[in-house]
Amino acid sequence: MDQILFNLGLLVDYPVVNLKIIIDGVMIGALFALAAYGLALVWGVMNVKNLAQGDFVIAGGYVSWALVRTGWLQSIGLSDNIAALIGVPVAFLVMAGIGWIAFRTIIVRVIERDVFTSLLATFGLAIMMAQILNLLFGSDTQSLKLEYDTLYFADGLIDVPIAKLVGVCMAAALALGVILFMKNSRMGQAIRATAQDARAAQVLGIDTDRVYAFTFSLNAAICGAAGAIIVMVWVIQPFYGMTYSIRAFVIVTAAGLGNLPGVIAAGLGIGAAEQYGSHIFGISYQQAIAVLLLLLVLFVRLMQQRRKRQVLQ
Image (cartoon, rainbow, N blue to C red; front, side, top):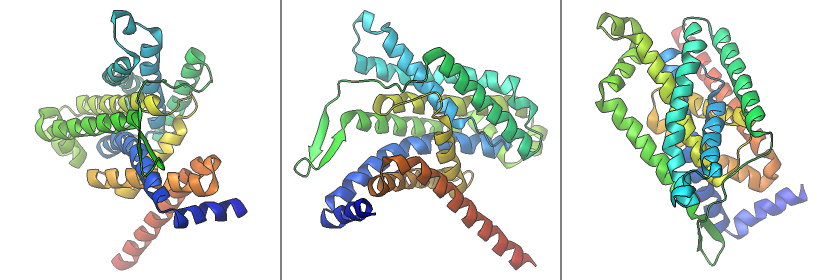
């Protein structure tokens, strides 16, 4: 308790600490929002609650990590920094393929089934992916040690690693690209039409099965790119996937389906909340904060639904 009070005192006595926490929260929250947007797509278009969301993120991180560690790109004169940047689009493409395989073998069988069946199927997919990653790469945590400098502000009290800034910029560029694709491409329009009314979309000649496959592949690709960015600035481990899945569910549940500004705001919010929680209670409680936020959001949603039912009665 004394340590908690001391940590709270630091926030009051040194307001600049709050700024550092918020900056760190925004940086990691941007990546949470990126993965959550993919979940919102799958949930909104296919009504599938994908519990393997975080495992796609981790798998993408390992794709980029393996690309850099093998030294193929360095052998032609590229630095580790450039190789890591190239790893983002590579992870995007590789995970798109893996997502398509997962859809054709597993997800296509549960689209028309009940919620419990889809949860059970995607939970099994998550376990399988985690075990495969464990067999291929081992259970140790991995990260890329890149040669980026660190920016210091406020007499050194605030440090901002340039690697994190690069990651946030890449996440923002990817999010913008997905938004433009959804608004301007024929497939993006087909996805939005299918999300609104799948039967009407079929009547209009849209191949909804193709739309479902593309949507799930796009979700896996987005998660893969997010994982490739995460491995540049944090660590990955085969069994870390569930923590990212929980965060994605918190964000989507809080923001609502199809609410991109809400997804971004919720992602940044949960990032800041986790950073504040780890500062006050300790880093070991960071994951517990994500679970607590999920329970809190579910409780609020439940109360909102009860109020709506009372009004209808």
